[in-house]
Image (cartoon, rainbow, N blue to C red; front, side, top):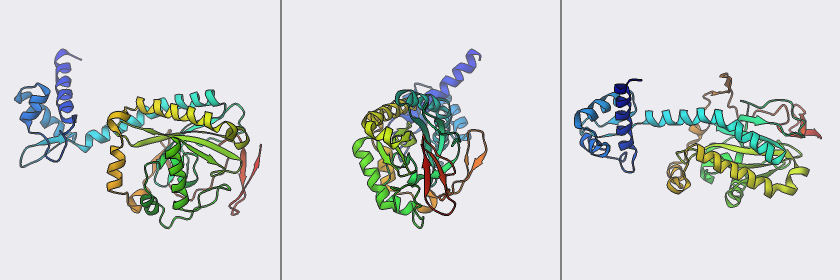
Length: 321
């Protein structure tokens, strides 16, 4: 890159930074003159940069007043960066959890009404042989469900799961949105979620939410294992998972002091509709293949150290340790 190219890049960065400060992307936006004052750039340089950024969809311009604000294209670009970063660093956190707890660990993300495994690693004592990478599981019965839905209101859950039958994957699977919300409330109070035989007989898990720079939940980190091993030390495991989730959140640009609950407040003001929440747009596996987001997918193999086989049509599972 030449010195001229570097100077051009710096000009664009200065303009975007001027548009990213508090108040710059409010209802009115900024006049080009104000962008110049905030960025320390002259009018001609600002005008040239803004024209290019508007053309690329990274900045929105009010046609009448000429005011500008950061555009949705910039937000989408940033979220793609977060997704790419997660694919790179989530496996490291999962491996750390396995090393610290001796149990299997996962990173799960929310897709429609399912959770999808982004990263996984079996514990040293696990009988788990089938990969869940890229495979969806109904989020209401997922090991990471309460963590992934931590910001949801009861009304939002009712809308998301309207008309969705809650299939029993374990003895304690939530039977309806109300029971799911009770688990979410307990997770909020504790700081992490503890599940006992909700997604699979004989299996317990601890999960914590990971937030991105937006303050919204990006993934959940989960440690799962046989309940006879995990429950007696659930507090210890839960703290380890919560600490790892906080560290990963910081790596994704989340600042609890400045971000606070702004994303939660925005969502509470405008609950997600059932149609939007249950979008059937395909998600992508790590290998690029598409996956289904159907909410009634039945697990065909155990996720944890307890191997499980499901009897077709029975709604129950047998386990072996």
